[in-house]
Length: 247
Image (tube, rainbow, N blue to C red):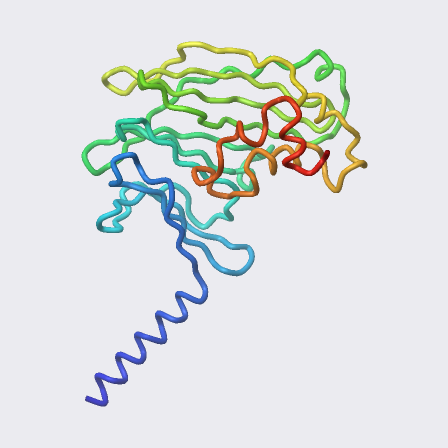
């Protein structure tokens, strides 16, 4: 009995160590409720952790996504029938120029296989981008925005540069019955008040305007599937500036 009590106490103390040094977050459930995103990370800097798609009923990992990385932003965006899913992550820690990328998977029973995306065209850069000689940091982002009823996926491709501003386009990607992806259309985004805001002098803020834009878009959330729709915080007019506290 003493031995059993010792083992129980040992297991209990081990659980306390794990719980004290790691945190598990489950979010972004599929529409049918069978799958979700799980991120387990340390509770101390650099907060490194692992991200995967799991089966909700069993907790089993069905698709490992990222391992031993410091979380930035995460989004798991599901198609309406739960048969395809797009994974968006801040991978700026592991890319040469920094950026945010998207991967797409299709469901095969309880497994997920990655779909190779076609080469996505870069947004049309403004003329001042070519004439500006600057070491300003450039960020590239490809984010899934919406799965359509047709099963097509809308991506936003964006380039941000602290010297000349922003360029972006909406790309619609379609999938055939064999899950081969192709580009259906590309729409260049028009200049808006967001572009003018990004050109404001950085010394007027505590950080570059691009950082404030990112915070406003996400509302400070790391798990974007839990955040309010971006349109509530940024409408290319004035309300987004009020939500960020600028006016």
